[in-house]
Length: 627
Image (cartoon, rainbow, N blue to C red; front, side, top):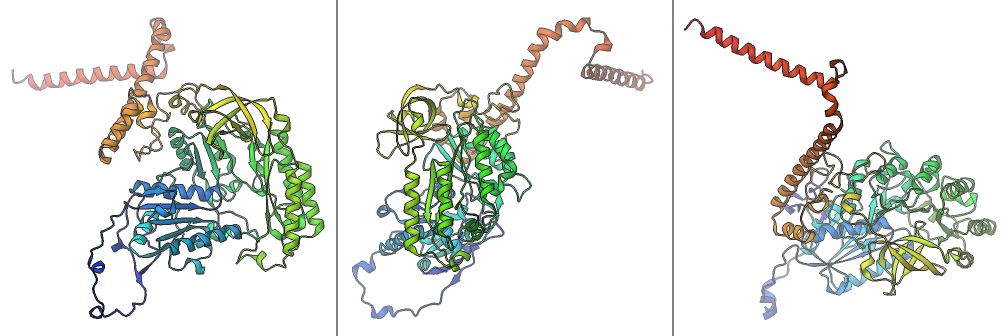
């Protein structure tokens, strides 16, 4: 067994899509153990049987994910890379050759579940790779001894780690580097939902939070890279885009932009028919206070869910100060009241931590009063769990019996609400993206992100429909489909831009130079997306039968031809307009009415004629004496 510490070549390791040769990696071998005397060991038939070699990329991988949507996105990226290199993915751990566990460090129960799974893996003698926030924030945990580790900023190198782990090496990649690329291969858990991380880390320093130890300080992706990713996933057929991060509201403060600027750029890329919806992820109050009006404008857009997750954690200013949350209850109320007033149908979810160190009965009563006042449709209630290494872990604890009692009391208050009672009989548009756990209903969401269950065939997945709400429950409502909306051609819809474009070009990317054109394969202007006269099935066969080099060449040639076609179409349209209007008026125009372009063309023609005449005269005079 060998230990490979932080495999790095240069700054960023191997480029995406390439294996890093072991020869290029620094290996720190462990202390060698004394070798047994082979002469004293009797050879059995089993020991003489040669082991069949394991070819990289032929094994099966089991991936288990704990935690937030950002973690889910990381797992999808890792699954995509492994699948691209030939590894099979399985939901059954017993069938897998290696287990990959993506961990969460927010709460103790999540880490306990991780510990249990690691023990099962070791008992099954399966190679194991642990990723996520736990190893990044607590790399010296006893449970992580003898297993390979992938840090949160090293997910683009998971193939290397898996290959070396299968060979018997212990690999640990925990160094921080540049953010992983957004165009890595991805296998989505739900093919209709793209979880798009817009930044990692945060600007806060909450006293109870362990995630900051793992994800670190704020690091934002550029607006251009995020917009390019949005174009790509829309072309892939995604119907919901979830913006995810540890704090969405803090986006861009490290690169000189802000969240409203990004949101407007993304909304401009969404199809105008509303076939793809945007959901804005969790944001803490301090970083959206100055942008409430702009955020409200975006939430009011037809293609954006009027839903926002704004965690408050406590209704007491005293507790908020002890948590170092950097806002007051008055500021939280300003956020909720402003968005509710400016955005029709606005739905806000929040979080509460019960039993934070120092929380008194009066503090808790203020929290209960807050929840009763606003009757939030979604409240995530959790007990305080001291996380090792955080300031709150050293504070005086509230007795566990009191913490549990407060949690039960607040849960009872929350569950007494009936937030959807007024919806029965209403007609709503919903977006359907998944199958319910009962296997009978499909799950859709209204613009306010209310969950609607409909009895409908699976063929409606990924569609939008008009439904009538026939009954309501505590957590969701039931609807009856009235109409399946006819979506306009996605290739045309995806290129319409509400802010700057009246007409649509044949290509799904209206820009002359596609932002993705440097990488032909993932370009949004794929063969299917540009109105080519070829069926989806035929194009799939063509792509699968080609070598990668041929496929890249065809994509580049196709992009060039489509670009030329767009120019020809624009020229023809302008020519038709000229022939129908200005061309008929041209003979009657006086020279003084000619435009700059007309005069420039005429001047160029006269200059050319004079040059040719001068050339002939020059040649004639040179040849004259010889005659």
